[in-house]
Length: 404
Image 1: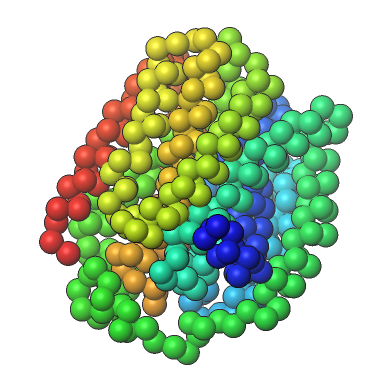
Image 2: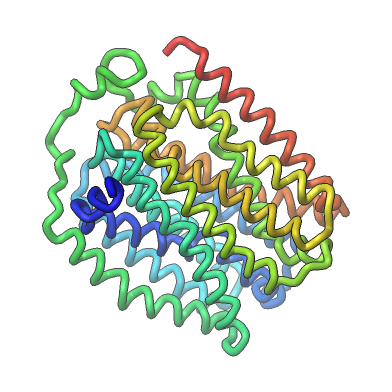
């Protein structure tokens, strides 16, 4: 009942955050991966070549995100959000119309910047700044948009691709987004007050778990805890993106079908949303920092299933357990930087952390693609990722014991 009461009381602002995280699907790896085979065929690219192009576009978008992301700290949220939405729609149209490889590369860059980068950044930063005592609940609610988009839109893209050319699918999606996203954002933020503009929150910042005063980007980059926390923060996106991006090879190697594997997104979404909601109140009680070292355990078990079995149940187990980790990660990821470094420069700090995440999602497709080109098995890939998950969890645990 507390959840429902809180959601109803803040329904318009939470709906705004939920909407943006949902429509970030355009720039997410799983959605682009649906068109992997068609894009490679259209531009005569190998697995590794497409992975490299995707990595270049993603790393470039991450670098831009570092600078563009901090603009939200000094701009009206409504204006910033509408600009991001318009950029995302234009990127979809460019993807549909790309005639040659350089244009495709720029379209991928624009999709990654506006979709995975700025849509999520705008949503989580605004929510994280607006709420304090109930930040965990708020983040868990808006974060449901991510897995919901993954489940619904991946299947929708597969269905549309069965009777439309892949470029036409992108145009249809762009048109629907323009009709829904722009009016909805304008209405939901019509009465929103940007309370952070012109106001200093140094009293809150002084109580944050850092040195006295305000944490800025320079201070964060000089804090060892940031570098110990980043590997475990990046692990879910790196590992899940790698396997989702090369799902065509995964299902072929395991003897599954693409329709079956994309259909398993339903389980992934169910577990992700459930754990996102369950984690919110826990974060409000114990804090995101204490949960962080343990949240990779389900994903590690899912990787064990991929490594030891070709049975169809291994795919379901992997998707369910990955959904658990991603659900927990979504909630703690929206709260952890505010807990550690405060909220006054949250946009700048989150854009820095998000840029690292975007880079990780850029590296995993190309790394996985090269390993696949060199005939590394899916089972070996799963074991490598398992080692990374365990090691990064240990590092994050060490960060909790450091003096703040």
